Image (cartoon, rainbow over all chains, first blue to last red; front, side, top):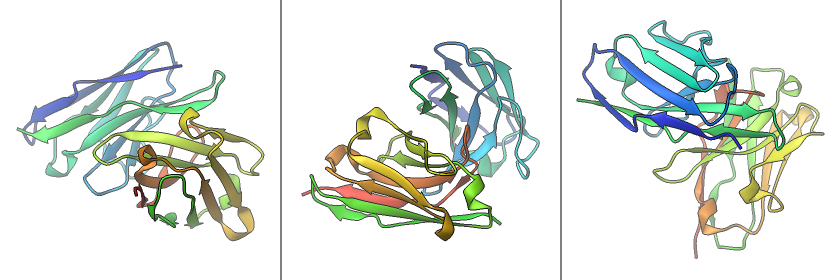
Length: 110
Length: 116
C-alpha cells in the first residue's frame, strides 16, 4: 500500500512569499499525483494533476513538479486567499485499487 | 458549469443506516467515474468509494467494505451511497466528486453524524 507523507505539517509565511510544499510517496508512482486546496468550510479544489498539469482556471502562481517518490507544490507569491490546507493524492494501479490522500499541509499567515 | 449537490446526511444511531444522494448537472454523467470522499471533523480527506461509468466496477476503502454500497442512476444523473451498520468513526462530511484518477469537481458535502 502506497503511503503519501506531506511536509511540513504547517508552513507559516507572509503574503508575497514563496511557498514550497512537499509530498513523498512510499514507493515510485511515476507522475501520478494530484494536489488539492481546501479552505475552511469549503470543498477541496483540484489544483494540479499528473504532478505538473494545471486545470483550466487555476492561477499560474501554482505549479507542481516531481516524479517517482518526491513531489513539490510551489506557490510563487502567496495571495491572501492562498492560506489554506493542501493535500496530495494518488490513485494506486496495483491491487488493491485504491485512492490515497496525504494528511495535508496547512499554509498559515505568519 | 458542472454542479454536484449532495443530500441525505443527518444524525443516526450506531448500527443504523443512511442513504446519501448526489445530483450532478452540467456534464455528461454517464461518461464519468464518480466517487465519495469523506472528512471527519478536524481531520484530513479519506477516499471512501469509486464507481465506473456503467456501474460494473466498484472499489471501497477497507474500513467500509461490506457495510457501504456505491451505486448510480445514469438516467437520473445521480450517485448514491448506502451506508449500513454505521459506527461513530463514520461521522464525517461526505463529498461526492467526479473523476477517475483525480477528483476534478466536488460538491459542498453532507454531514453524517453517528451518535446515540
